[in-house]
Length: 415
Image (cartoon, rainbow, N blue to C red; front, side, top):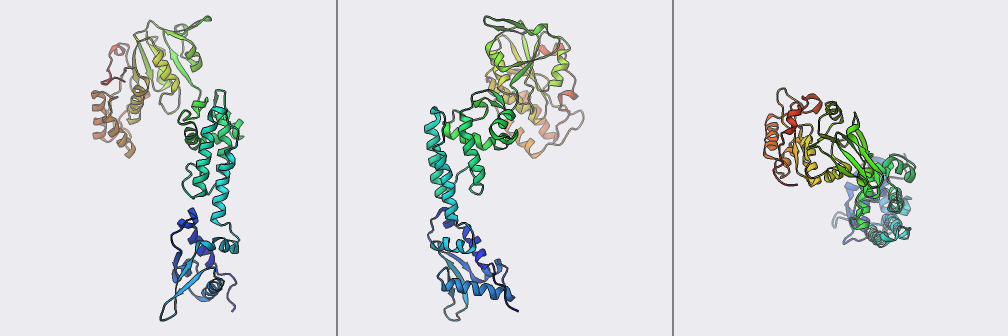
């Protein structure tokens, strides 16, 4: 039986070469040296007709100076195959493949071409510097993070998006902007981390997120209830104390207004369901929630807390799992106001979900933080010792009584 015409041994050699430094960077201190038998086995040609075919292909490549077969000095048995990077283009052309050097140059050309894309004048020098840097690293086979050289079409997409993002001038929700920019309402979300990394590099950190450009994941509003007046210069006063239910106030309106209130306290509430229940009591306190998914305060609630009159004492009430305490920690760290906690106690009256490895790491980090008080840390330590979260959801615990609202567990260290 006649052996097969193509053994695949040269394809196996090319696959080995692609993983070398020479293929990645175009620079090599030495040739690729592969054990003869190992190469045959990797090509699936260790025996039989396929081996005959593979040895024939290697011998022909040796005679044409595409590679060098090195033999044992005494027995003349083939020992290894030596391949030089100088023959890269010949090998890949023979196999009908694009050589790594061509792919490097084509990838680098993407960034060089992008350097001439129109961008707003204030970012032009940063844009060109970043593109030229990426051009150099792509051509040299270096890291072009967050661009992947194996996905040039995606790199081209990101490069075309960046100038349009830098020119974005309206405040919009992310899905709307994604439809306008990408033709897909979810595409910006999938590329967000990489786009933000590029934006920070181009702008020197001045634009580090899509939100800095006015592109927001969710509506930036604060859910408010209680005795609070928003005084708009020259236009009038909005008295939230007249409303029976919580109202959603946009961040832009909060920025325009001066805040006035006779209230002594403001209670930030992690979960809106609890906020609505507390609102039914018509207490003399301001109730505030961010209305965002995930519980962490967005920029609008932070701006609101900073704008409150200084006489208003701020308390926070949330879930008492590790994430709930982390939300309290984040709120204090960002608000630059002294914030107490209300009802943030580990309730072990019945076992809750077991702590995960991530939960334990969160607790360990929070126990070292200056943004939690000693009593709060004692609750975390008790949770860690118990190994479970207890009754941690706000909705499952009794609502704080009106009399309790006057009890403030103050923060141990100033925010």
